[in-house]
View 1 (cartoon, rainbow, N blue to C red):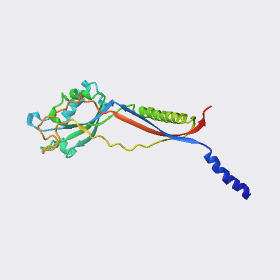
View 2 (cartoon, rainbow, N blue to C red; view 1 turned 90 degrees about the horizontal axis):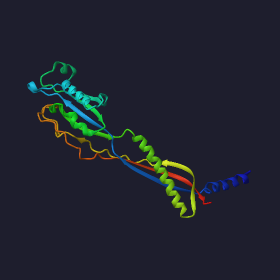
View 3 (spheres, helix red, strand yellow; view 1 turned 180 degrees about the horizontal axis):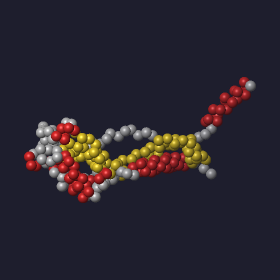
View 4 (tube, rainbow, N blue to C red; view 1 turned 135 degrees about the vertical axis):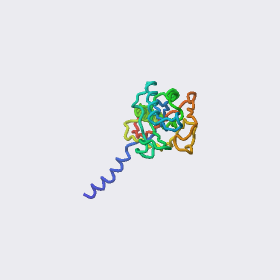
Length: 236
């Protein structure tokens, strides 16, 4: 019994090392233009005698402008409300300032100028680009992974052909986790860089929308690295 066990111990390592393999990494990268743009918009009511504007009036102007520009109203979501209290808002206390933050999703950033044109510029406190993406981003990532795997096979093929061999069955496939890429700074489209002393809506300066039409938005980079292990076979 001991001799049979010893033979098995000696034979098992031979089985483990009898399979010749090649480990390769395939890389694929693509850059695509964004098609979805998300903007943070802050509307702020202000006082100024007959020229005062309430938050409700500003919001009405924004909704009307979206409709005129054929942008679905469901593309606009309220994300936050700033005010002293609901009771103060109802009573319209003197000196009270209220503001609302919205998230607007559009496909054409060139429409921003026409969207804000009919809105009282004093009520537009801030507009910031917070994200640019694509609706087919997941599909593009899948496609890029496949290209990375194909690249690994191509690499294994020309390497082995140089020594008269060829890749056989794939034994293992793994994907290298890529490091987190630092998020790009958000782009503020408002020329006002700080909150005025009077609080939100307290400044009398007009909102100025920077014209970004001649500038191309930064492309989305998709990078994948696939590790693959192939058997090494003799050429027929």
